[in-house]
Image (cartoon, rainbow, N blue to C red; front, side, top):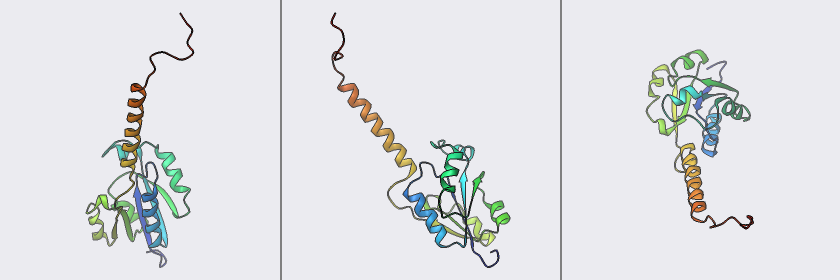
Length: 155
């Protein structure tokens, strides 16, 4: 707490920004007096899963453009111990796909909220949908190629 203000930190990759990202950030905003949002760097994300589609600087600017965060910072590590201490974080909000991973923050007197994404959109699902749609389009195009090119000169 800082001057009786609750400081909440939430973080993520925020690749291919979508509705569930917005819901989680808005939830964090609702319980915060001061909201800090961390955006994972490309190097951090690449250390545990496929590299993001959207480059770090662009993802950072997207989050900065939202009206909800008071501050947007780069996130360089999945260990939030130092950021919690340096910024006097009172609560941490993260998607429930990380359930249990940040329970260690409770030992630092930080409330941890695992936000339920539920079913629906995710960056991984979006990437798969785009990929599958592209593959289907290519397959359809290969199957429907004309025997000759229309308008080509006669031999």
